[in-house]
Image (tube, rainbow, N blue to C red; front, side, top):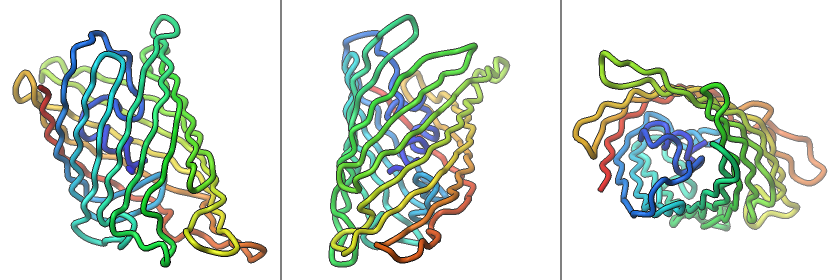
Length: 259
């Protein structure tokens, strides 16, 4: 969740944002990507959901279809019932609709095994999404729409990514930028009247992958994620700022193996 939890996970694992912005597959053969990652902060759409975290993932890709699971286990600053722990199951199908243009519908099922509904947390949420992937003057651009069926609200997001080759070092720098906005009508479980939540966020990041073997690599990443204009409002009461929405730098290290 992650999240921009999945954007951060994709950035640090060096998978070119495959979970959230899948590219058209070139071959029907199936493959697995297993990733172990640690992050100094857990940020999701501009909200801090925890401190240092272990965030492994597994993804299976076959042709244009991908299925995977991403998890987060907090190491400090746990948010009990929310990111302690979290398991997110996702899938996507990438369809070519033009030259270097793909339409990718997908979904994410967020699960929180230890969440307590009587404390306002949800045990699971379902969020379908659709993305459009295209390249423009070297920029990979992805507008994307989500709709959370439990929180009852949309998220609109725009991501741009590009790579700078480091030929002498045999690697590259992968830059990513994301801006987004969201609004939900049902932020907390079992509350009357419902609590609304809305806000904006952005993320800028860079990742440095290092190929260890033909099928494995380490990736060092850094990103700055920030939430703004994030408010909570219940019924006719005055709106209150969401204290979890703030700015944080996130340092990450991952190791991914493909087979």
